Length: 199
Image (cartoon, rainbow, N blue to C red; front, top):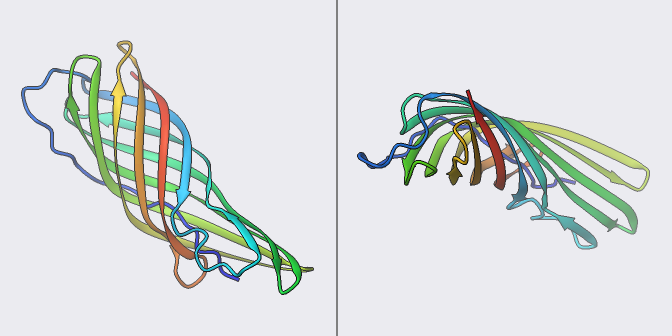
């Protein structure tokens, strides 16, 4: 039994920003974390009748970045997307399955300052995903795993509410996470809110 659920590809990217905008975030190192909801877009595709499936879960991430200028930077992240889960009956036997996805990404970032306290940002890069799938049918079970390195991109808004602290809301897409021969693949969307501290 194959669950088509996988997630994230990481990063190396850039977004174009208009010159002359108000200065927001100066250069420097920052760290942060975020929590949100993951949606494994094709996570429940192809399942047999009799199984209920939930392709959304709570996920979290940690990140560290460096802002070279007010417009350009680079960011690394670790993301745990949680699981896609299915359960029910198959061939009259109790059945359960889940697919867990996490991984590392590296992205380039572009920032468009709107004011000293608010800015917009975009990101583009690559993501190395690790996918672990497990299924149990009656008294038997099977497991599989896969890896992928694919593109990731996203956009968001940031509120710089103090000199060092900022809050951000962002959306990210991780393309074709997983292995088509073992775990199956899926695009993954991740919407999150987070905090960052700039040194």
